[in-house]
Structure formats: structure tokens, C-alpha cells
Amino acid sequence: MELFTGWANAGLPALFLASFLAATILPFSSEALLAAMALGPWGTLPLLLTASIGNTLGGITNYGLGRWIPEGRLMRRLRVDPGKAERWHVLVRRHGSWCALLCWLPVVGDPIAIALGLFRARLWPVLLLMFIGKAARYAVVIAVLRGMAWPL
Image (cartoon, rainbow, N blue to C red; front, top):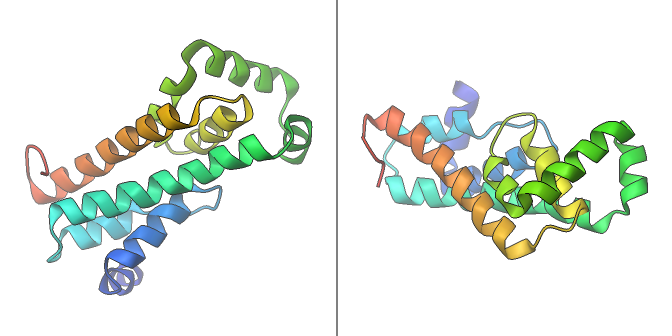
């Protein structure tokens, strides 16, 4: 926990960076830092917005990777089984941008964001729904730590 205390001392910019990195394909967690900061002097709304915006921008980075890298090259690079790729394609076709609500999930959240970009889901709905999903997760973390019914 001392590691996160050091980051927490760096304040909201550190939370933004941690939240951004946690939403990319890098193995990183922002919840521990948010938890350390939620027990400190920071206001609920600044914590919630900073973590949510940083994490959403990280998720949109994954979306951009999916959109930018040609499908065949990305699938080969990530060693994705063609059958699994087709299941992701069907998921995005069936549910579209609504899948972005699940980008906060551990393990599958990053692939969902990449698939949304890869299969050309519309950016603005993805951005909005991704933000809502990620903000809801962070709101729950803050509410639990601060013992609130709703953290705003």
C-alpha cells in the first residue's frame, strides 16, 4: 500500500495517469490508487471525474488501435483465433456501441474496446457509453470506501 500512498501524494494528475494506463493493454490497476485517495482529503467529484476521464481516454486509445490497425494484421499480432474473432464481430454487430458499457470489466474490457474500433462502432456513442460504464464503476468504489449511498 506504500506504493499507492506515494502515488496518492502526487494527487489528481497521478490518478489521471494511473486510470489512463489501467485502461490500455498495459497491466495496471487504478482502483488501489483511487482507494488510497478516497480515504484522503480529495473531494468525491474531482476523484470521480479524474479517474473516469483518464480511464475513458485509455479505453478510447484501445478503440483507436482497433480502428487504425488493419483487421488481419491485428488478429495475427494478438494471435486471435478466427472463430473467437467472429464471435466478437457478431457481438459488436448485435449490440453495437452498447458493448462499451462493459469496457470497465477486467480482462475482457480492453478486447471489447479494441473490437468496437476494429468493427467500426460509431465513436461518439462508444465514448459516451464507455464513460458511463467506467464512471459507474469508480462511483461504486468511492461509495463503498466512503460509506455513501451515492458518492456525489
